[in-house]
Image 1: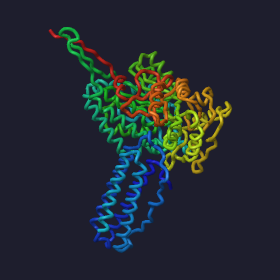
Image 2: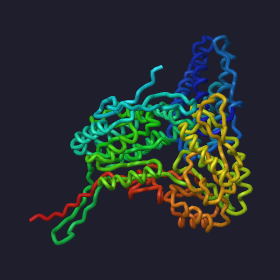
Image 3: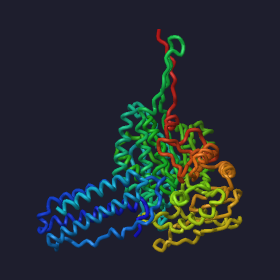
Length: 141
Length: 484
């Protein structure tokens, strides 16, 4: 599905954060992930914060003058089939988390580029990307 | 299923109208009734005016900064309910959800701007206008004001006026469009939570009787109106007859010129937004596309290709770029203009009639429609269509473009796309419309600049929002003072 405008990009961003929140919540309940507890907690908290930041960004930056279409950007490359981490071992959960963070980082960087005409939105998207980079580094340990 | 019946908000309470006549509110994407609206009567207006009049002395004596604090609270409450307001708006009006979000944003920006009252409402003073005599002028509130607002922006337009009137110390009555009353009802639920003193802000639903009740009421000081030009003219004349202040903003025929040096690829997305955003139901929408000289071929080809790619559907679907028209009657009106265009000899390049959205077979959809070879004297080039219908006229140079713009005597905005500062300057200097876009297709001033058109698009002196709005809602009391 194409991401064609401001609204669809921000909505997909919020959707990613919501899905990743669900993943980290489940991962934290998996005893096999005990060793990653603190980093998963950080990721979970950031997903929650990011949702609020992105919702505020959607509210405050939607301007009818510049609700212009965006081209050549779709959800498909950023959609990952996420397995429920309940049945995974510690290494599998860690690898899945790493994939999610890498996917999110790539998405936010590309989305920021697509939204560069709205500099405040691009700045926020880059800020979220930066957090995701930090998560990925922490997970790589 | 029992449909909700809209109530009036008077003196801090939700009350039923005294009327026995009711109308329907529709979801235009589904063609389904979703609510019932009372066509209010004079008694409803009287109740609201009495409440507003009674609340005025104490509200007027409330310090401006304290009045502004209500608006700060209101802004926060609007932010918290932002998405819900936008969704109600799209449900009853039809526009794409991002357009609704943009509208709610603009509404809140007016609340934010009005909190600058302590700077924007100040008067001025001069010592020694004669030996030992000083003179000063205060801006004072006047009493009860009212706004009568249209169906295309059910949330925002009342708020071009209301926050400024309130923060200046006046009390206020809103009459929403009977076609889309649910958004303002949702907004007033939030107003109620914020806890304004009883009677300071009121809402009366209705149609013609409520409008005339407000226009004729001796205790109303002024009327702010946005809507169609014939009604704007009627309101202006009637307010003149009853001695009220008035600002009556009407419809428009907005022209968007594209100069031969314009960057067409950069311009296309914003042209599409200009002509098809809000399904063309904006008084700032582009209506006539005027490629100048030999850029016409390239522009038409790319513009039509982009228009064909617009996703039309329910406004609540995030992928929708253009929703339905707001009502069944309005759809018929837009279709009749398309028929007129064909009958008068314009060439239909893209036909939006018989447009269907399979998931919403009963919606009031009209697809993007583009006419070429339109002559300036044709009906579709002269009258406001208020739908997704574009008329292409091809002036050969800047003089012809300016002549086209200024010959309508009926425009809110005029826009130009060019890479030339000189051409842009020439255009903005010579065209009559009061809002000019340069490489901008929707020349919508934000809350801190005035909004209003030219000629038959604006009746009255002081436009919507901007700094000048404080002049509309206050009277200058001049004191000349000497002490012995």
